[in-house]
Length: 560
Image (spheres, rainbow, N blue to C red):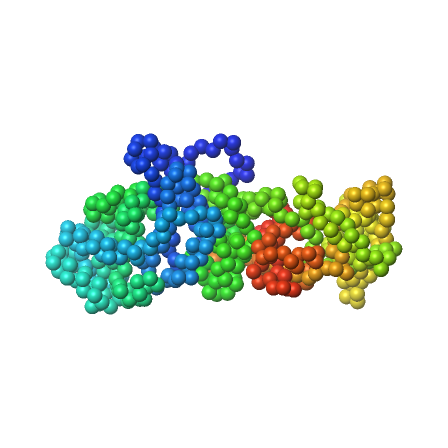
């Protein structure tokens, strides 16, 4: 698959995409007074980032041209669908910032679709076929060879009407009969070779219960549902290009409102998979904790990870609407949330890999109050932090034998503690295994931030947390779920490319004490560590933070 390079910089004036050009022409010509789009998900899983592109497109077009958008659930397969998915889809659309004009279900039209099928039978354009599925597939031929007509194709209208009604009334078992459109078994488009319109499924439906035991196929239900609702622009992804001919055929033969189908490139993104079937495998086989696991490309997963609706809308706007499939680098999505949180996330100090720093010449009975900024671009937005003799700092901020241009702590080397004092490393201790246990420093009293009279210049600044007042939290560091750019395109089982380091859990990180009162979903920049949000697993006294994104691109794919 060809990878398209997406630049972060947006043009000052955006040109119209090809669908906008069509809509503007339709409105200016008077073809439509008002456009009506629809978002038609099947409730058999949670929405993913690819659906976000479709949502933003359909709802965005209606918003731009003063039209409306229907939400219609394509609930024609009772075996795989569930109310849980229906509710999650509605929650995700609302979260993205959109409101639908009407909420419909394909099952709302089951009676009308049945009558449409009867109409086609009466026109001699549909017939009941007793063939097993294997024979139906074999008789369709190949792209280079025509299909074969069977004996059931020439049943009389009366016999087809009777058999179809018997199908509806539950006389036959699953798979015993199907209703097919009578088009052309030699058609160049394989989908036009007498496609199946109805199949028998004795399954309980989440809305219609046990009223029906026959259910329409997607290709029969979709276009007709669009027509019933008077959808003007039925927008779908490129894999439905071959279906457009059948979409138009049904509408033409039924002589109903002529909805039109338009196709755009679906969103394919690096280091993930978009197939609901594959995502369901990840959930069912416990590779992730659920549909909302922050490593999943689902909207609920991104929401839990700390992504905002506006960052996802910005991402969808940047990738645009194309007529050719492409592979979008996930780093563009990370760029969008990083840019937003850089402006909005409160800066706080948290130590993820702690070691004790002891200031030998600081009075152990003193706890000093200092001020630090919440946002770098808002100097008046400050908070109070406490400082005392013992602090927690990151182990990575100390090096026993410093390399060239090492500007953090090392024996005899000075560094500034953020919003506090300059300290000099005097000594350090290790345990029997050689692990660093304590760092001893002295501080320069005249070097207090905002009132520094020491005239000392240091090149390094590190963050810290007061050991006397620090709270603890669990911190979950997420990496990309797969080690290869396009796992679905690789040979073998896509699950063999799962990143074993996609989640690192730190049980006892030290954080500023005021964070204990932060609300779930709140966003923070842990200074020098990344952007984080509070997870839904958090409880009073047991905070859990998820890393939304690093401060800069830091993922390194596994080398061969």
